[in-house]
Image 1 (cartoon, helix red, strand yellow):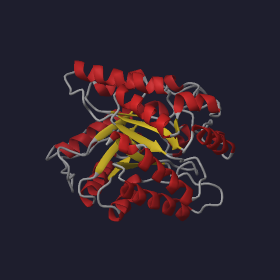
Image 2: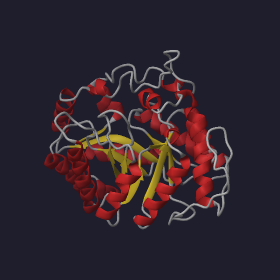
Image 3: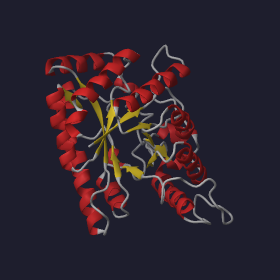
Image 4: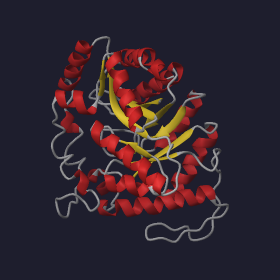
Length: 351
C-alpha cells in the first residue's frame, strides 16, 4: 500500500491566503520527510472551501521544495479548462519535477463553480471526455489536431514541452458511481475513489473496475487510489473524543450545501449525468459521528487503523490518499504531530 496526503487548502476564518499556502507547503515538505509516497492538491474556485484555482502553479512551486515525493492533482476539473493548457502545464510540471507528476482528473460537480465560468453543468461529462481525448492526443502524438464539439486546435500542433514520463504521467479519474467506474475501466484508466463514499461503495467500485478492466483486456493490477479522512490516536477512546471535538469545531454545511450540489439552475434538480448524487450535497453533510466512525473514516488507534487500511488494500486499492484534516482547523504543529504519528505507527505495517 502506498500512502499520499491530500490538501484541500481550505481557508479558515482569520487566515490570509498566504497563511493557507504556507501551512500546506510545510506539510508537503513534511510528507516527503516522513516517507509518504505522494501528495495531491484540490482545485476549487470562488470561495474559501479551497483556494487553489490553478494546481499546476502550486505544484511547480512544490517541485522546487521537494526532491522525491510524487506531486499529484486531486483533481483537475477538466470541463473548466482548455485541455490544451492542461496538457502544456502538466507537461511543464512533469519536466520541472523530474517526472514526478500524477494527474488526477474529473468532471467536477459544484454548480456554483460551473456557473461562475458560464459552463452548463449538464455538459460536464461530454466536455470531460472530449478534453481527455485532447490531453492524451497531445501527450502521445508528435503532431495533433482536434475538431470537436467543445474544443479545437484549428491546425496540427506539437506539444512543447513534452512530459518527461513515458508514454505520459499516470492518470486517475475521479469515480465512484457504477456508470463512471465502468466507463473508464473499459479504457483501462484507474480510478480515484472519493472520501464521501462509504467503505462498502468504494470496495464495490474497486471490484467493478478490476472486473471490467480485465474483461476489456487491460491489466487488472492498476494502481487504484482511495481517498479517506484519516486520523490515528494512541487509543480508540482518544480517537473518538477527538473526532467529536473536530466535528463540533467545524460547520460542515459550509461544504455540503446548494453551492456544492450538482444542481441544474434551470430545473432545480440534479444536472444531467449527476443523478447518482441527487441528495448527497443537499443534506448539509449531516451524518452522525457513529456513521463516520463505522462507514466513512479511517480512524482509531493504530491497530484499528491498520485493520481498516488492510481492508481497503484487500478490496483492491493500492494507494491511500490521506486527508488528515482539510476541514479541521488544527494548528500547524498539531497537524504535523498527527502525520508523524501515522507515519510511525501505521505505515511500517505496509512496507
